[in-house]
Image (cartoon, rainbow, N blue to C red; front, side, top):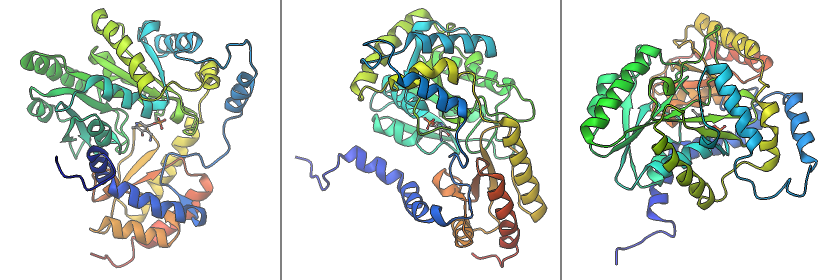
Length: 397
Ligand code: PMP
């Protein structure tokens, strides 16, 4: 018998280990957050929720029939609202049966990985990634394959993707606009990716899927319109969450959608697979009240113009102070280069000044930290002088 030294499954133990830096940082964060003067760590609300959101939930808590709170899979009205929205706002055609309600993008990604991967399969992800891609891939026994984005443009490095494709490749995860770089990939970049995936699929003799994490597709600045990877490559699983558009990540709702351009035989196979996976992972559908609210939620959004003003204030304030940073096309985040070689030490120094930012060591970027502009205007104004003073401190390490 192989020796076991842990109560925990070996796989879970390893996955926990991979996320050690995340867990360590968030332990200290939880102690510090209540005393902070500015909290830039997560895409969390720092102001009261949208009244329309509260009204929709309140409305749908009142039962309309005996089945109101019965076991619920994909609510037909929710599916119809999503289908209309994708068609009207993006010109994307999706069959009603190919929309699967999930507990946000977390649930959608987890289901997508479970449905696509066998142990030993490989999933390509772009680095810097969202924190949990590696863990979600590994939890399914598959192997994450890291491909760094181009550091000058933050674009997808097409040749490196081509080189990373092997007989084991099952999928690639693309997140545009990207957390944490803020980059929305161009149509040319996505078309080039699609060509490489098509060629790669033929070379290895099976379909390589694109998992398109579109959590921030409605968080775009400067009048930009969303460019979806799904429109370049039909063999894609579109992942969405309402948690960003509404800034309500504690009310878990989102979906997986398969484009009508995906071959119908493939879509049919996904339908049963997703349904069974949602059941077996623990009835992963969002609660009934949230699903009934989707037609209303579809029409609501946080104030993007205000978010853009906060982005502009942070970008200008930090640049004036001498920081190097990128200007995001979208998302909640500004990625800033640490003025100290020891980024974790700099983040710790800011924390002693009660300004909390997210260290890049939690997302494979040891020289950067991330600022979320979901922080309030007051927090931003309080923090800018702290940032300005911190960069004048003697460089440590
Ligand atoms: N993908 C990305 C890129 C994200 O930034 C997030 C939220 N931080 C998620 C997925 C998960 O979103 P949700 O919590 O709304 O499911």
